[in-house]
Amino acid sequence: MKTTTTIILLLFAGIAAAQFQRHVIASANGAYGILEKDIDGDGDLDLLGASEVDNTLAYFINDGAGNFTQTVITNSFTGARFIDGADFDNDGDMDFVATGTAELAWFENNNGTFIKHSIATGLNDPRQVRVSDIGTLLDPATPDGDIDIGVLVSGENTATVYLNDGSNNFSRFNIISIDSPQYLHGGDFDLDNSPDFLITSYGGDEVAWYKVGVFGLVRGGTVVSNFNGAFGAEGGDIDLDGDDDVIATAFIDNEVAWFENVNGNGSGFTKHTIDSNLPGASYIHWLDIDNDGDKDIVATGYGTDALLSDSEVVIYYNDGTQNFTKVVVDDTIQGAATFTVQDFNGDGEYDIAVAGSESNEFVLYTNQTNALQSNDLDRLSVYPNPVYEILHINATQAVQQIDVFDITGRQVFSTQKTSINVSNFNKGYYLIKITLQDEIVITKKVLVLK
Image (cartoon, rainbow, N blue to C red; front, side):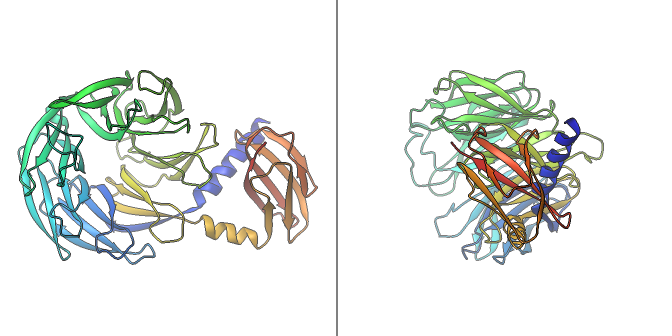
């Protein structure tokens, strides 16, 4: 049974990984930051990219089919790394903000050319940057109509906000001290309908959440401590029980985990390890990437060896009960860093755009699910899906064998009949492996409901 289990898990991983086709968007020395925005206002998503070794910021215009044309904004923004976008001057087009080795600046969109406005210099390793209308320091809960900027300054151990006076003049306020802050994300962890903030501390090996207080942030609670090299994190309702949980990565521990908000108020979190072998586990994002109603996870492993050749882009597919199956989308990229997940080619499926800092490239992985399913449907269909009682297999060729595996790879059923009574199966996902007369094997993912 161990051999069978290994084979079916590898088969499932191979099929899921094969659904993504790799396209190099552009070469960029030290590619690190990537962001999706509709830059030209034509209704599809374009990309912005930051590459720290060649000090370059660029944008990539999408033709609507996932083909991108590059325009360099500047090649003299030293250590360009993190970016975010918003309409700073309220003229209806997309501007953006970026951090470099020691600088924070916003770039004004002037009909597709960009004008740099430096906000701060001499910063010590500014990391992630976020833009939002957070109001004023005295009243951060009330928007005041302009775009403010939040920056994690790792070398200064501060989370910092630059408040906009309405004319794009910015004043700096340090809102909290934290050891080597790495990543910030929003959420509502205590269900009071006011925004909270999730921050990872790489140096302090912890993830914590904070509430907005007077003149800064007030610690609301600890999500996890002793999380070695806490790096990426996001808040969201992973188990669909109505409160916000947390997903996070630990760079040094090579770990991906989700943390269940057990009381619904952020007072305690239960850790569930998803993966302890993602080399240099870095950035992370949750969404329903396979459109089956539950929350999956996409993550990058930056890599740990000298050449970062063990770097990976991965998806963790949720079976609906927070059991995750890891699928490697790409293990040829080196230094997989930030990424974004959107439908870039208009086919209704999520694609993944990733920055590879050591392989010096921006890469797009297009989701080929629809194409693969249409090819399969030429010879075989499995219905209904989801199924409550009888599952039917309709094939253009004779069926030699049908094997059914649960999501862990355990074989639960085998038959040569093309109708299967699943009423005694446990609720959940199953892999149906169908061997046709010409030895072609097709595997389908089926959801059994009660």
